[in-house]
Amino acid sequence: MSEATTQITLIGTRLATIGMEFVFNGPTSECETCKLRNTCTNLEKGRRYRVLGLRGELVHECPLHDGGVKAIEVTESPIIVAIDARKAFAGSKMILEPPNCEEYYCSMYDICHPVGLKEGDRCTIVEVVGESPEECPQGHSLKLVELRR
Image (cartoon, rainbow, N blue to C red; front, side, top):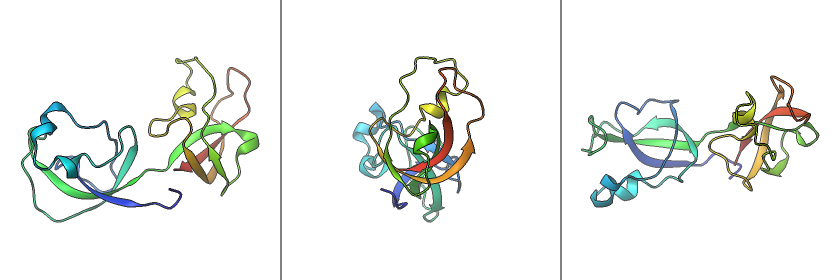
């Protein structure tokens, strides 16, 4: 999915703003009996999405969102990731392999292990953003890149 594809889904009315990003965490038990379940839960669990547009003003009742839900258009968000500097070339394709690191309290951990991407994902490097904000405590030479699945 190197080109940005869009999907229609439902989201709480208070969250439905263009440009807002969120991680889809999957359905809850309240969703099991809802007639809108297939439309609300059509995103991939654990992925980060960005709201591109609103689809009308119709608001549907929802047991989770007190203001109801409305239709929106979303796409997977590109994600900034720290990768091995030797592999950081704009336009190149790669398979995400986060570093084998257990330094969970490292300030770089979240950028090396980004939410929204999983090990083994096939990605395209959209842009090389620049140098990592700090040196890796394990001595890896890292660059920041923008990845899209």
